[in-house]
Length: 104
Image 1: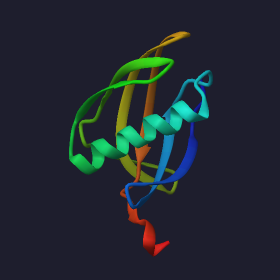
Image 2: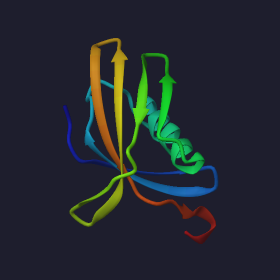
Image 3: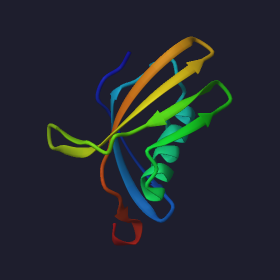
Image 4: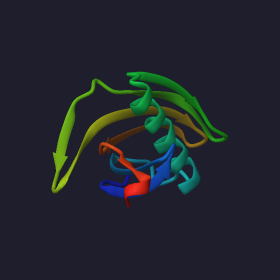
């Protein structure tokens, strides 16, 4: 299990920043980015839960819309429970409010 993995990506016209509070080190970068984009969809569409499925995992993302501070990083918490090729996995992320990508 890996803690505190930060990431930034562009998606749907926004720049996104996220921090994994809890992650599965056996998951690929591609899977991690796909989960981040699904969380971005939830954030923009104001959803509190979403079923997800990838090539190597299947599960559910949830949020209770609470936000937390991690060092200098502030973001909304999302919890992910997955069944993977390696067994059950639990992830937790903070996602910062997106910024218009044309402003960066």
